[in-house]
Length: 78
Image (cartoon, rainbow, N blue to C red):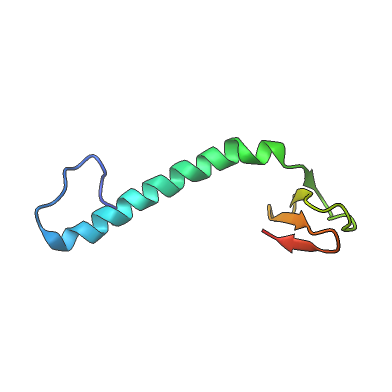
């Protein structure tokens, strides 16, 4: 059960790992929201990866939201 981040730290040392986990979960959710709102706006979304050959190109597949990078000879999953 996640600990509410608004609750002061527990004096019980056994609870500190749970507090750290709760803080980490909150940070990850914040970063995910930022990435979904900003980073993906600049990545073109395609239904199918085209033939590799333009080194450095980055695309996102619409089918599963995976991000791929063109090495110039092949696509690699990021």
